[in-house]
Amino acid sequence: MNLKILSGSANLPLTEKIAKNLGVQRSQVLLERFPDSELHFEIQESVRGHDVYIVQPTCPPVDEHLLELLLMGDACRRVGAIHLTAVIPYFGYARQDRRSRRREPLSVRLIADLINASGFQRIVAVDFHSHAVESAFAIPVEHVSAVPTLAGPSGHRSVEPRDRLTGSGRRQYVAERYAKLLNQPVAIIHKTRISGEEVSVQRIVGDVRDKEVLVIDDMISTGGTIEKAVNALLEAGCSPAGINVLATHALLVGPVA
Image (tube, rainbow, N blue to C red; front, side):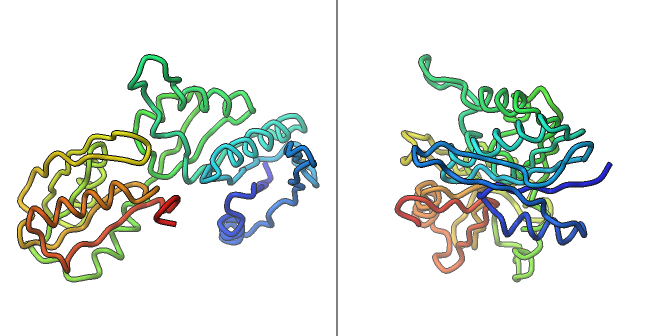
């Protein structure tokens, strides 16, 4: 099967780099909006009988980029793509993988069903917010991690035995992966999410006093969690000049933009 790589509008430079590394040309598409804001998509070359990869992170604006992905998948399916893979480096709605209140939707399951209905046969994603996201899909998911790559640059600095890595909530397993690669201990920041923009830090488990710390997260959205984590670390006595932050996805929206 011949390889075809298509891109939505979310991250065209990333698609270009992927195509260049694979030695193929990015397939040409038309993506535009009608005056009433409806999205129109058209493939401008044949993909019949091809193995098609659509690169489209669902970064902000999440809903717009998600709809692009769904329409692109449906178009490829309808014109005879023999195999269809969605490459979604950042997967939006991943934080909504469970219902914390009775009247909420199970959003991540709905999004997974929509992607499946659009004709995709496989998903490639980078550092899901939760491993539970993978279980929402009925199709195969290739979940890759940026941890080994990011741990390399962070390890170039002098990592002393007194240093410590920290992770919060469900990021604990990510911090533990970094800790294993860097041969450092872990401290856990326990937090409670009050709203989409507000979190509360209850306690830090682990000694951080007079230590340099590397704060680990999978993404930074408004920066609220990181801000509360850093303040809690300072109150616990860590070295003010030795706080570093490392995250896979830098969304940087709202006040942190």
